[in-house]
Amino acid sequence: MLEHLSHELLRKVSPRMLVVDEVHHLLSGNYREQRASLNLLKFLANDLQMTIVLVGTHDAEIALQTDSQMSSRFARFEMPRWQESEAFRGLLAAFERVLPLRRPSNLSRREAVTAILAASGGLTGEVSPLLNSATELAIRDGREMIDVSHIEHARNSVL
Image (cartoon, rainbow, N blue to C red):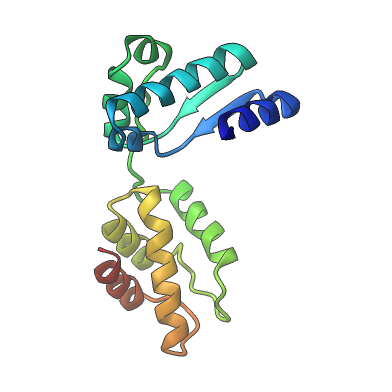
């Protein structure tokens, strides 16, 4: 039922691209569930003539290798870990604009960048929970801005 509804909605909206995140979770299902999910993705790609982008950890590649048709349809592209750069500072500045803090944290300063990279391992998916936790700490202690000590404490609580 849900698959049919999703298919009809996608047909009406007719997107040119569908991004499926957390594909590595396919491995948590049994063989039949994995097959059904992969077949659904193939069907959507063929029927709706859209590009599908699959995103996940290294296990996503393993999940796709269980179906030779799927593994041949997708080119593997590994996102490099963040390093200290203007692009990473821009990402942190974007995060800072949406954090509910009363005072600026200046997350793009060198000390903060170094601490965030160390705590997140340079992984985008780790930066958000780290900054959320650091924000909570900054609010709780009344400082209303993130400093390196918040990042270090957040690192310990997120891990």
